Image (cartoon, rainbow, N blue to C red):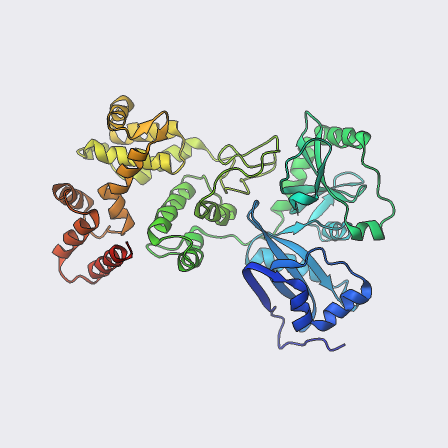
Length: 478
């Protein structure tokens, strides 16, 4: 067997936003691995992936693993792993999981076999809560067309931390009161290699629901304890959004691929910074929050779960620290958030010489960023020494805000306000109040022309010149 050898243990990686054909990669680059798969009559679970990685042991390529990006749960989910028979038992699967968690983030596993679950128990990444029920720190993802249920269930992807060795299936309680249970369909590997798979019937559903009901605290603590022991990369705020005026590599890649404009990226960056400082986002959920905000579709795509996130209405579990769809900290302290929001507005009561348009902009921007209405009102009233009735009267008179929602005229107001352009073009090098006065005194001109003419007053300052070029480029694009 002509095993590929390397100078070190680095892994070659194939990555795409679309899909990769696993068998094509094996045929072209690793024919000896494909031959071993066929000789063993090993069944690949998935023929396609987004990420293909070599598995390297002692400078030899001895297998591979592949990942699919779960669109619903914002995670890289391992959908295949294979190690040549003579190299098994060396903890290669465990090493791959550890490396992924230490360098990137916690992966999930797509439809694990019973063998994979038993290995997770061996590695301390999962534990038996009863003789058969297993709690896992690594989530299991089941594609929608492989989810089964004892009741009507929408065709939706499933994510769970639990596996039942007795039935060799992933298991999840959708509604404990109604005894509504979802579970994965049987895998060929398990049907071939295990002959002790128990039947699934009404007695089983009653048993498993009573088990979850009677052991709710222990089950929750089991998952929390297992997750606490994971050595997961701890991202910082600057890593995810970028330091100062810079964008992170994550945001720059989205801009380069035309997924978002630079101005929209700046708005999202500032929103994440404010939410993080308010305690609404945890370090481990920063990347999820980033992905969520850059995705324009925020409609809940999974609706069959009893417990849902109060912010995005996607499914959550009792043990979740944060929503795995929108990234919001599910245990954040709203009092801390209020205090932080007041601080980030960065204006004192004694400075309340701003006209009501400025305050209206600040309020509508809070609402637009998804901040609760009561918190937004509280923040504005306490920071600007203005009564809600007065501000609401202005908003209502101009048709900016009706029945708790921003109107189309309200969005026009937001997008034409001087503060919008001051923030969009990062004009913090100049005094905002002076810029605002200039903006309103030339309101008959195009807003971008106003910005250009205002900046041209400052001569040949290098930073000002860069700002002018950026605005001119923005004008030419439109």
